[in-house]
Structure formats: C-alpha cells, structure tokens
Image 1 (cartoon, one colour):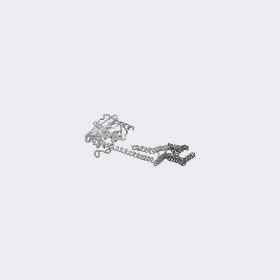
Image 2: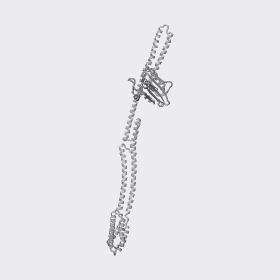
Image 3: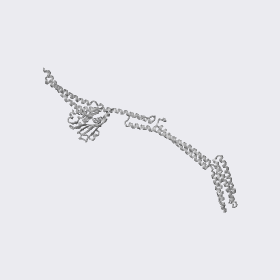
Image 4: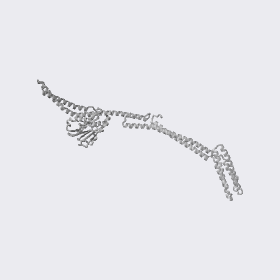
Amino acid sequence: MLYVRSVRRKLLLSLALVMAMLLLQAAGGLSGLVSYRSAIQGLDRVLTGEPRRAEIVTALAWALEPLMWPALKDEKARISRQNVLQHRLTDARKAVADYLGQLESSNPPPDIRIPSELFLRRIDEKLAFILAEELPRVSQEASEDATVETMRQELSALQLSALRIPKSEVSLEATLAEARSAYRAHFWLVSVAMVAALVLFFGFMRCGYLWIFVPIHKLHQGASRVAQGDFSYRVQLSGHDEITQLAEKFNSMTARFEEIRNRLDGEVRERTRQALRSERLAGVGFLAAGVAHEINNPLSAIAMAAESLEGRLQDAQASPTGLCADDLSVLQQYLSMIQREAFRCQQITQRLLDFSRGQDAPHSRHDLTKIVREVLDMVGHMSRFRGYQIVFDDSRPVYFDVRGSEIKQVVLNMVANALEAMEGTGRLEITLVERADEVLMTFKDNGSGMTPHVLENLFEPFFTEKKSGRGTGLGLAISHRIVTDHGGRIEACSDGPGTGSTFAVHLPRRAAALGIAA
C-alpha cells in the first residue's frame, strides 16, 4: 500500500486514479474512433476517388443501345438516333477521361496504372474515330445498315477492351484488410484500457475503503462504546493522517473522561459513606433519646440501692454485733438488683453500639426476624413512642444473606418514619414474608398518608415534608440506596392524606447470592 501521510494526499491520489481511469477509457474510445474514421476515409477514397472500369463498360453499353434499334425509314428518326449516339459516345469519352484523371491522382501501382492507361487511350482514340468518321453516316439511308453493324462490332470490341483494364478494386481489398488489422489492434487496445480502468477502479475502491471507511467506522464504533459508558475503550488506527490524529485526540479525551469519572466516582463513594455515617449518627441520635431515658431508670434504682446499702453498712459498723440476718438478706437483695439493673444498662447500650458499628460489613447470613425485633426493642424503650401499637410476628425466623447493619438501618428508618407519621397514637403493622425468590418486608401504618407529590419525590435526597428540625431528608434516600445495592427495591403507596402509608421492601435471593460471590 502506498504510504501517504494526509487525507488530502489520499484524496488527491484517489482523484488521480479516477482521472487515469477516465483518460484510459477516453484514449481507448478516441483511438477506436480514429481507426473507424481512417477506415471510412479509405473506403470512401476507394469507392469515390479511385477509377472503376465498370463505369466505362456501362457508358459503352449505353452507346451500344441505340444501335440495337430496328431499321428506321424516317429521316427524322435516323437523325434523332444519330444525336443520341453522339451524346452517349461523348459520355463514354468523358468516362474514359475521368478514369485517366482519377488514375493519375490515385497513383496506383505501375502494374495497374500502365496497362490501364494503354487500354484507356486506345478506347478513347477509337471513340474519337467513331464520332468523327462513322457517326455521320448513321443518318444516311443508303449506308445506315452497314454503318450501324460496323459500329456495333467496334463498340462490342471496346467493351471487351474495357473489361481487360486491370481491376482497381484490388485497393479496396487492401483497404478492407488494413481496416480489419486496425480493428483488431484497437480492439485489444480498448480491451486493455478497459481492464486497466477496472483495475484502477477497484484500486480506488479499496483505497477509499481502507483509508476512509474503515477508520471512520472504527471512530463511530469507539464513539458508540464511549457513549454507552465504556471509557476504557481505545480506537486503534495505523498511519499518520488526520483521521489517525483525530483517533489519538479521541483516545486522549476518553482517557481524560475516564480519569474524571473515576475521580468523581471516588468522591461520590466518599460522599455516600459520609452521608451513611451522618444518617447512622442521626439514627443513633434518634435512639439515644430513648436509651438515655431507659438507662435513667436502672441507674436511679442502682443509686437508691447503693445509698441504702451505704447507710446499712454505716449502721453495722457502729453496732457491736455487725450485720444481722435481716441486713444480710437486704444486702444480698440490693446487690442482686444492682447487678440486674447494671446488666440491663449494658444490654441497652450494647444494642446502640451494635447499631452504630459494622456499616461496611460484608454479606452474611442473618435472621431478619431478629433484626426487626432488635430495632423494635430499641424503639420501644423510647417514651414518646410508648403510646403506639406495633404489631409484628417474630415467632418464625427468616434467614437471608445481607449486610446486617445496613438492613437494620433500613428497618429503623421505616419504623421511625411510620411512627413519626402517626401523631399521638396509631398502629404500625410489620410483616415479614419469605417467598421462593425473595423476602418481602411490609411496614403499614395508619398515619398521615402521602400526597402524589410526596410519592413522586419520596426517595430524592434532602426531600422531606417533616417540620423543620425533625428530619434531614436522607433517611429514605439512603434506605433506597441500601436496598438497591442488595438488588432489591422499595415500593411506597398511599391513598392520600389521612389514609396511612405502606412501604414494601423486596430483597431478591439471587441478587443476594451474587453479592456474596462478589
């Protein structure tokens, strides 16, 4: 393949191939036309320019025709025949003279020209003699028959002499042979030109395909791959033309896009982790209020028991007998209560710690029933939610491969939203259904319900309809993201304000299995 650096040169070379193809076709066609013109001129020269003895024979035959008339008795008829004979004999002499003139102009070979001139001059001399000596006696009645017979014999002899003139048609055969030879030569010339034009045409098509169509197709394919999000794809082109330079710029642009995309993805992941941490802290803060109140009761009991024990120990130290049996019983009772209440505080704080940890834990097998129950236990200790009725059947365990801390956060967000949507009192019904291909968690409340506008924007970040200071607008958005990462979906429905709401969390089993494999 010819090494060409620029598209402009490639296009110029393609145009040169097309021009060469056209010139070859034109040259072949013009050479054929020139050959045809030469053949026609040769034939025309042979047919019109060269002498033909048939004209002389015909002229002599016309001069012989009046002599074949029957004997004429009328003098006027004889004079009329004499005039016709004179006119036709003159035409015969003119045909001989024309033959001689054409013979001189065509300059045939000597073996044709010399004998032809000899016969022609003899015929002309004989015709001149007949016109001068014999023709006047044709009109005389006494000598008419003898003169007519003599002229018949002489004109017949002249016809035989004319037939002995060498044939000039030999040049016609030579012209035809020359035309056939030229035809064959130009036929092959046109054929070769046509084959060369076809070769140039296919060369032009191949060059256009390799230089233009293939690179543009690769660029289009690369643009399509990049448009579909495959920023790792690179267009591979060889050469040094503008299309190759465009492909290099395109690859540089794609690499820059990939770099920016990776950086932005990292920032998004970091912001997502920060949002998850913020939402988890918000959940922890939401639970901390109930935990603080819950811990306050056992701590008060512990403080009271410790104070009572301190007084009894002081009394025992002052008494000479020490502790009595009643004091020992009370001491044992108070120490048991202190231990029990301390363990209770430990359990409450442990639940809060469990919720705040493990946000990046991998998929593992968890009992979803236990997760829901733990969340309800934490929420149930909160005094502001003690007037609500929460219905949940935790008699049957449901095991599923999930990130336990994330699903616990989703359950907490759903329960908190449902409880906050019910003012003062209300009923929250939680169901956990295990199916063949998924696990369905449903949270149904009889709270304030939702408008179509709220349903449309429910899972958008920072969207909230709560009173100022009561929500960040990230709870449902993060819950939606967590469920989506597990391959599931959250569906929300409500018949309108005041009719309550239902949230359905679908967790497919196949997506969970793929998550573990990953």
